[in-house]
Length: 161
Image (cartoon, rainbow, N blue to C red; front, top):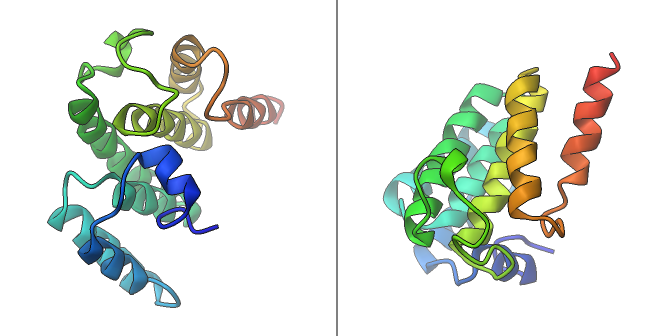
């Protein structure tokens, strides 16, 4: 299913994506990597409060192995989502109960993006950072709504190399 226009989008982002953003995203289908990057950056810069383009952009960079860029975009996405969810700008200071992370919207997106940062940290070999992020995620999401097991498995695998 299409993450931006399908059920997963509503479950994660909690709202509709503005039509101009959808048009920019549509331009990425079948385009070159440069075209995809340009369209997604345009969407992020033109609609800085719209969360889905951040997700697509950090995932695009991560999939290409551009982990520094992915981390930069995810960090920006985390800040935008924190403001929208009225969360502390320092992820370390966020506590269970600061928002309901189980309902669609900026809080859930924030949590999902924190998971992305943990994943990126594992892939970058930043084990201590990844462990800190995972511990925070386990505390904020004890029932594991976001599928943290995947990141933990990757961390365990990277530790056995």
